[in-house]
View 1 (cartoon, rainbow, N blue to C red):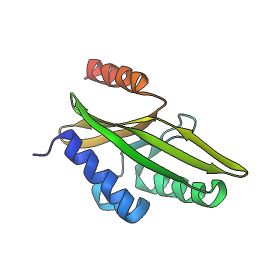
View 2: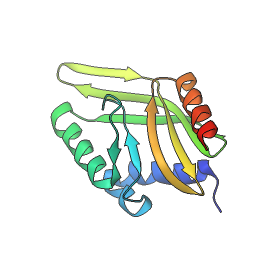
View 3: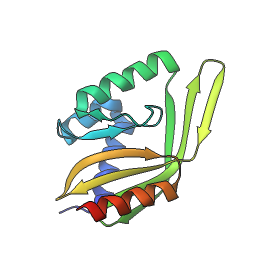
Length: 130
């Protein structure tokens, strides 16, 4: 059995190596994604994530991300780092925290939060709802 951080790092590493296609064998079709820049709207399953990601790469210029700190909080893994989103005429730098929500060793949701405090509040709400 892997820890939430080990599972999340496997997802992150697959994405860094192979792009969005690297996630296909690692996630279920009902997983919920809430990436930065999607205005809180969920993407359900790999196909919606892949379509959104490809559209971002072609229309917005893409992004780069780096994780500086991994931590486990209950059944969740938090990844704190930096995200640079390229746009016409420039770029945006943010320091978000990504949360990977696991239940019974299965990824249910991956969400990008503005900061660690917002991410921890979401993890607390998730644990309370369990």
